Image (cartoon, rainbow over all chains, first blue to last red; front, side, top):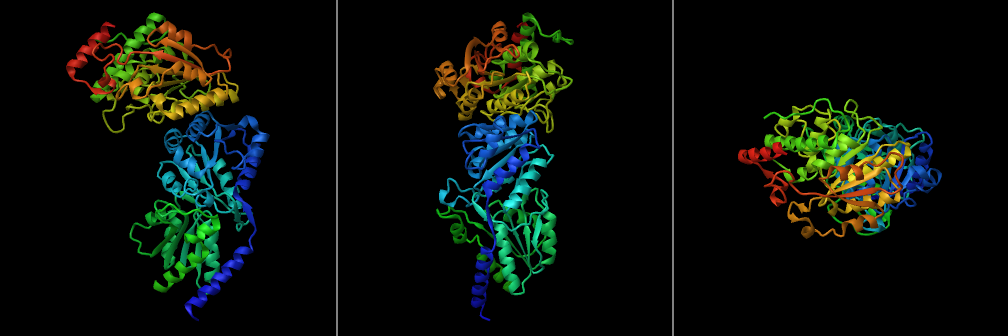
Length: 333
Length: 285
């Protein structure tokens, strides 16, 4: 069959499959999980810089006003206060937007939290292009690169609402005295994980088995990778989908295991191609691995403004583009 | 000439004892800088009495248990004055005296230009980048109030440091959260790296600024021990709902005549002749 016809058919398959999944709003899930955890964790406190409503924290703030601190629009102060609270035995969760949590207060994240060796959970919502219409001021496409470069910082990027719940619980339970950057989306995202998902910080999960190629993705792109893998299966191509929900500490073993089995690897991230998941995969492969790697992510640009799903698609962050890259990669390797 | 270092301190020290300890502090600091070859002389000497009064007459700390949850906290926001804090911690018994001679000498030594909680027992927060300390102190004070503890949190800032916008974010929040257990101090020595602090960035009227941000604000002579005791020793449990700011007017380089109010001694190299002259003045007191 003509290659073009095959691709058209698979794209149609992806459209139909995508529509079959329910969605859940990420920030709503965040707020629900926080509220569920606060009763069982007496030292849990939350801070926000005038983003209580948009981060889904209204119910928490109403139920536990003495454990919720709104510091006004002052992210540096918020992060420093969180570090001070943590050094006195509290477990602070900083609730903000990724663009501000990371860039506006990066020195506080590094020094007051990381260097001081205290556990603060820095939540960056609306990450990537999930607030696409906000434009480059509110899109966060370099946050993983920046936070990953801070020693001791754990970087977690869950995919759907179920994994947001599991990841937040794992972050809260993590015993290490180190800060955690929890990178979250914003609006509705397809729910594709199962309720019984097994989430462990630093350990990638396999969403789809396969020995022909490996697609490594995280955040909203894990779902796109899964759709692409399902479509590839229609053509008899077996793609492994690795959900690399923790970018740091990085599950190098999972990458090396895949590299030993498959003919090619694709990384997909809702982030700049500089310094994020794709870079981490290449770092893991730097010792003598010759496996072809294609990276999908945002090029070194200020993206245009647009609704999230259309903007992602326009920049190649879609199952369709993963499919195209995969077919090309399989043809050549 | 060996120093007469008091071994078993009868705390709190008397006024005479505190003045003597401030003198020892400057000598320790000078010896650290001589070990390193250079240092922030001016910034350290301006706050010697402030730090001495806190650690030897005011703060509730336990050298045998540096992380005691009920201790008073001290944040050296102007982190480059760390040697002044190191001397206090050494003389209080938190850290060994041998560390003075090792200051900045080699990879892996414990004492460096800026205080570090990772390596130095008794340091409550790593500092160095300016404008961080007051926020961390707000967090500590908030935690203390949540847990109904009666500890106090002291945050010392430089008068150049308060150019940082984050300081004023913290100032506003301390008033909002009604942190009467938080005491800030501005070391008003009027000189920054580049010169006259008011010329580099005017901050006057400083007292009115802190008052406008909701702080009970007092102005004192930062080298006058009785004034320091009077303003920094807030009775436990009796504090009001407002954080307190003490603007301590000081002399940069205080105690060594050729350093006093000289911009370049913010941080400079010291030769042996200068060392001898400085030590002679400090030994005489």
